[in-house]
Amino acid sequence: MHRKQLLGILCIIAFITLSATVTNKMNNGEKPEPIPAYQQQVGDAQKGYEYLVTGNYVSSGFPYKFYKLIAGKDNTNLLNRTGKNATVPFGFNVIKNEQGIDMVVPNCLQCHAQVFNNQLYVGLGNSFIDFSNTKKQSNIFTNATFQLLKTIAPKQFEGTQTIVQSFKTVYPDLQTEVRGVNAADRLAILLVAHRNPVTLQWSDSALLKIPNEVIPTDAPAWWLLKKKNAMFYTGFGRGDFGKFLMLSNLLTVKDTTEAATVYQHFADVLAYIKTIEPPKYPKPINQSLAMEGQLLFTTKCSKCHGSYGADAYYPNLLIPEKIIGTDSLLYKSNQQNPQFIQWFNTSWFAGGAHPAKLVPYNGYIAPPLDGVWVTAPYFHNGSVPTLEGVLNSKKRPKYWSRNFIKPSYNYESVGWNYTEHQEANNKKIYNTTLPGYGNYGHNFGDELSEADRKAIIEYLKTL
Image 1: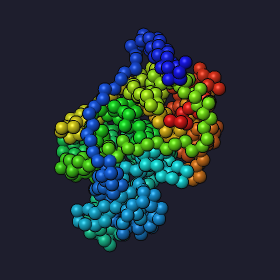
Image 2: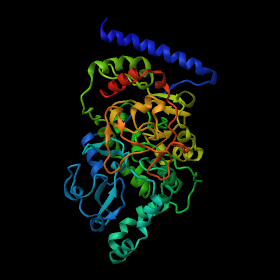
Image 3: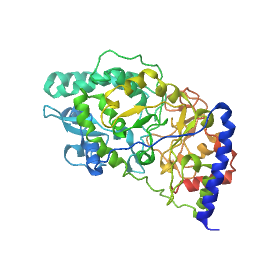
C-alpha cells in the first residue's frame, strides 16, 4: 500500500478514535470546538520587520545618553541594525521623541526572541525572562543615580515621564513565583485597569478592581500564528490580530489618536510574523524511526494538533478543560474576568473597520507543533522541561531548575537539561505545586509504550 494512502487510512482511524473519546466525555456536555477564521489585513513584511526593530510603538523610554552611561554600549548587534539601534540590545529600539531626543524604548522582542545555541531567533518565546523580582527592580526609578541625572538634565528626562508612570504603577505587581515564566497577561490587566476604554487616557487610580493572582504563561512561538484563527492559549483573542499585537502600546500611549497612528503599522508587523519559519532540528534524525513516529502521531495526535508536510492541516480546536485536564487557573482567572472582557469589548480596540474582541473559553487550544523541538519548556505555563515529560506524565519533575547562565539542551528527551529538587526553597526552582504552575493533565501519551514515545519524539524533531 502506498504510504500516503496508509496515512489517509490512519487519519480516518484517528478521527474515529477521538470521536469515541469525545462520546465518552459527552456525558459532561464537553467536546472540542473549532475556532472560526477571521479575515486579517494584508501588509508589507519588510516594513513590518523594520517597524518591529526600530519603531516607536512604545513612545516613552530613557534618554540614550543616560542609557549608555548606565548600561554601556552593546556590541553584539544580533539584529544587524544600523545607527544607534546597533548599540543597544535586541530587546530595545532607539527612537526620537517629539522633542527630537534619542530615547531607548523596550520592544516586542523582550518576550518574543531568544538566543539559542549562540544564535538569535526572532519569534521564539523568551523562556529566560525574569519577572520573579520586579518589586526590587522597580526601585530603579527612585535610586540616587536616576534622580541625580533627572535633576541635572531635566529636558532629557521629559520623555521618560510616561513610561516611569506606567512602570512605577504596574511593575511591583508583576512579580511571578518563579523565573522563566511570562507575566504578560498580568501586565495587560494592570494597564487596562488604569486606562479609559474609549479614550485610552491614563488614570492614576485604578478604574477596575485588580485581582490578586499573577498567572504565568510561556510565550508561544510567533511562527505558529500563521496557522491560528485566534490568539492566546484559550483562543481568547478573536478578530483583527493587529489590535492584539500592538497591546504593548498601552505602556505609553497618550490617547486613541496615537494608538491609531501606531495601529497603521501592525498589518505590516503581522505580515512579517507570518514569514517567520521555525529553525530546523540541528542534529541527525533517525529517519526510519521518525517514519514510525509519523504513523503513530497520525493516529494518536493529529486530530487535535494537525498534520504536517505537503498535506498539512491544522484544525484550530479548543479542547475543554475536562478533556485536556491541564492547570485551569489561566482561563479561570485572567481570561474569564468579566470586567476586563467588558473593558476590551467596549474599548477602542473593539471598534473601527477591523475590530477585535475577547471570547472566553473553558479550556485551551491544541497548538500547532511546528518547531516544537526548540520551544521548551512546555505547556501554557512552561511547567514541563522536556517533550519526554509531555508524553509521559511520570517523567515530569515536581520541583526543577535549569541553568540560566549556561543553559544546555537535551536533544534526546528534547528540552532543557534540568536539575530535580526535593523542595522549592527559592524562585530559581520551578514549583509545580503552586496554583497556576501545575504540570498535570495532557496524559494522552501515558498509554504509549516507551518505544512509541521515542518514535513520536523522533518525528516531532522533523517538524
